[in-house]
Image (cartoon, rainbow, N blue to C red; front, top):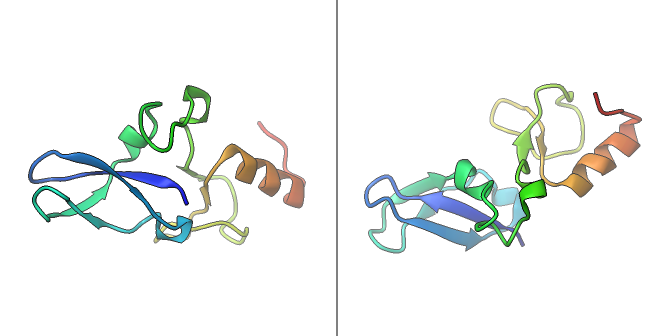
Length: 101
């Protein structure tokens, strides 16, 4: 299971939670003040967070504005596909015969 980074709006606490990939949009409760927190995508891109990702992998996950909403990938609330990792990106490209720009 991947780690996701959250930031508390009340006490500015940053914390990581290991969650199922299907819970990528879920909120979490702050362990310090019990306030509901949203994911901190900016902090997840830093190499010190999110399961030791390297700087090369820092762009993942990202929302694709070019891929069609019909591909097999997690989606945002608006139906945009979310590319979870470099491996996931390669799988999508191979399955649909896409090339990088």
